[in-house]
Length: 115
Image 1 (cartoon, rainbow, N blue to C red):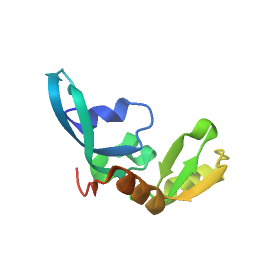
Image 2: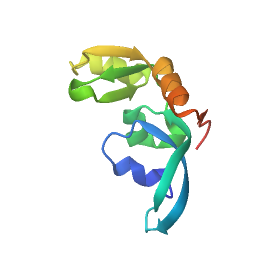
Image 3: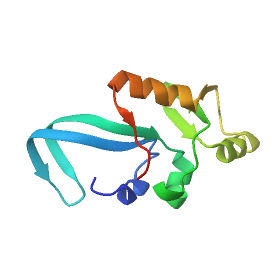
Image 4: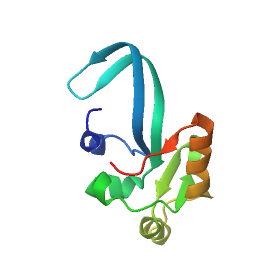
């Protein structure tokens, strides 16, 4: 996507970043499609903060909740507390820093500092 603002309408974004595109690249109204792509930079975002306020006001993630079927949901501290208070199923909690570092190591990319 050209802009991260359009991602706010998507279903639970968890990772934002930039991607290198090459080969045949086609531009569309909201972004690009390419023959080849690889992440350049990435970071975890609290999906609740991102949905409510956008990338500029997203708080740092503290935990990642592992949901059924393997889905990972990153949350900031205040949103994780709300989930606990209201009974959101949180079967397994992972440290956000460790998950983010695993992603950075797996793809051999840098952390996305700002959007």
